[in-house]
Length: 293
Ligand code: ZEM
Figure (cartoon, rainbow, N blue to C red):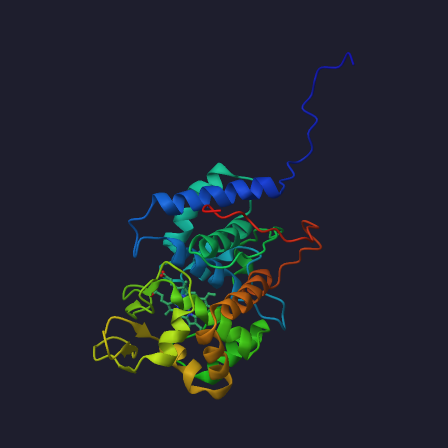
């Protein structure tokens, strides 16, 4: 009263509706830019979210999606992250449009969006990640090496706090996307529908005959029938190792079981090392509406 009207708003407190707008913008951009790879940026967006999260080390509570440290050269240049610039660049205009969201929350939200827009299960999400500086970059070697065996898989995912069942469930993401010779050196897709999430990866692992691909590239498998699909050495371990195989068979038989256990493992993956209590105080998780609902 009698005072000049001041914009007495506190800091912008984004709500579910605001994050849904970000989801919608990512979903729309996914639809608009359909001339990439097999017709979608979805797989590479999911890989970005996974590589941001999969650096987590439970013992030292370092790494994980909190920080988005892959923006910085030491981590962005790790061999495992080759090609993920495509995903980060895809999201740059979204970050410009919604400057209040952190890169770390945006990368994970985009992973959630990619899964849902590729017809996967709803992935409950909560914000609260803060961007951190270059000093928080993780050392090279925390992400899995596709040329290795069961001991390596258990060591890498065990370090994050996952058990056999969760390791197999997460691997079902290889229903999506492909390998690129100019990124990992490997070549080709795992399934015939690399932009739709299904349990086909598990079905193919169990049902097809796989042999070594004859080529000069790194050792990988090809299906004997069409020679168009691929499996990495670490993928084949899932049917060779008894402990893993039981879960591969369960998921091959039942897509609903796969979706349920994949969802649970992905929620855990995306939240590794994120101190939600200390940041947003957001406790409830949200489920975003997909573009086709
Ligand atoms: Zn992947 N992955 N991954 N992965 N991954 C590739 C591609 C994709 C391994 C791996 O070495 C590779 C998980 C687990 C493991 C995705 C999601 C998830 C590629 C090909 C390699 C080599 C990269 C390229 O050339 O572009 C290994 C060894 C893993 C565990 C043992 C988990 C867990 C994932 C998510 C939950 C996705 C979506 C892709 C496809 C990317 C694209 O660009 O199409």
